[in-house]
Image (cartoon, rainbow, N blue to C red; front, top):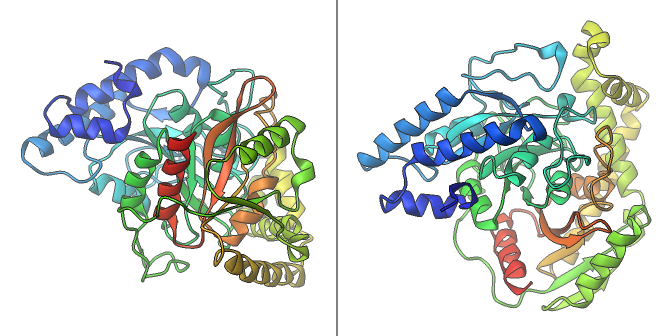
Length: 434
């Protein structure tokens, strides 16, 4: 049996039956990483001895009838998220050898659930656009996307079954699309960002990578949890890991205001997908109110970047990648009026979106402009993701399309706010009918 091809759910079931130990499972991934890491470059820090130590503790817990929902399952963590026993360098020379003394809240939740924190996955610098060393496992000449490049590549190459990333523009959905895996950006404010390097308080979303929607649901049931230190969280929200949808949901296909940015093969493939869609689907327009959606997201993001990263810029911008410097400087001219106007326009768009979700269970729309660029310095265009990130709705990339070179292209499925569990059930339904 090829252990690295098991889903997390399958591995947990085997562990519960005594057919597999966490130590053996983790070792299988470490052996594969040893073979592939020099080519893929998904990890910025990994300590095999520490990983095996955690796995042995998980096996002891299971022997003693203890352990949480993820007991013994390895998880990779994007290197903008603090870990107390591993460096967190934010993909930047300016943070070289930074060693947090405390776990980020979501890492604490993973540890409390018994997860093996396998290591730190490569991120673009400060989760922006300056690429790290990671290559796309589906084609090593292509980008894995950004900014959660290492997290997506590690899951895509079966180096781990689960990984945590983050999205402020398209940093979960786009890498998932490029590397042919599932990537969930949950509802805004459902995962704590305490202990995570900030870009935009208004836009930052931690998220999850896996090779099945059920594996994502497993992690979501652990980390989608209220935390008082993140002031954007809703204390009344509870993620429920139970069936949430009927067998015949109604879908809306949305090209969106940035359709013309899509590459021809992506446009052709998604239109073909919609034409052959085995469930009720209707093509709709978002309307004129969304015409400035991408611009509003750009204003909010740029203004936030210059505010969040100005301390590093002012400290020593020579240690920052030129791409990062450009992104910070692009936000410096953003005025308070422009920023507030963009937020107000986004609120109007959210109201329109609410009315759409009274008629439809989910939206189908592109997850990326096309297949992964054959350029390791170009992490791709997030324009099909950014305005949905601004809306705060849950979104997932499903690996169902192929580009002109046979490389993966995802479709983006979106549901209403706090319907994350429903989104994952709908994703399973779509995959079953493919």
